[in-house]
Image (cartoon, rainbow, N blue to C red; front, side, top):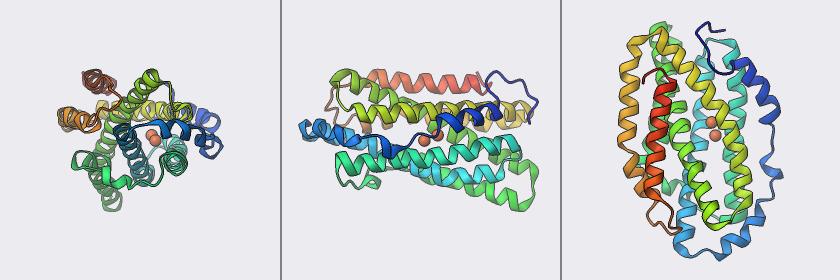
Length: 270
Ligand SMILES: [Fe+2]
Ligand SMILES: [Fe+2]
């Protein structure tokens, strides 16, 4: 159990909450009801919605696959308890999108939407960080293990969950506000978003704790955030090409930057 100053819920409290709130079942959401809305979309609208859902699906599969490294490497027992709920929840998030494609959008090659600016951060680079933790566990190098745990938390919870996913939820909020469509998609996203809130709280708490104990890790973490902030325009451009729902691209850009700043503050870096 950590002794650092904690401003949010403890891992054990988050674990306790997850046992109740994280137990929802994607199979029980009647997403097929959204199919009627899908049928009314033009080609560009289908393309934009498919693109965002595909990136979410691929991202959820990737984080499900890599989180086990973090759980195994984590020295703190309470955090491992919480992470066991997070692995389960990430798998269910991927399942929700899998069902949504099957019942609503139809068969889609989701991996085709993993253009380099998304594939790197969501899949390839995250896997490398997991493998680095794996090597640190087997080498017995405590300093390297701490460093790799810290970098993984910054990448996974700070960037993927804490910046990219949360910006994506706002995209869907705008879509709903504009069209009034896809209530079942929003029902699933509301549940996913609540789970992700716990993941981010836990991850940023851990990151802050590690950076307080190891100030020498702060420069590479800050550099990671700066590099990722610099890619926000090209990622936004991809999602808004085409912008068939005519959503506010500039607002989305700003939300991305705001999340970067908020995560840096939570990590104690701003
Ligand atoms: Fe997730
Ligand atoms: Fe998550």
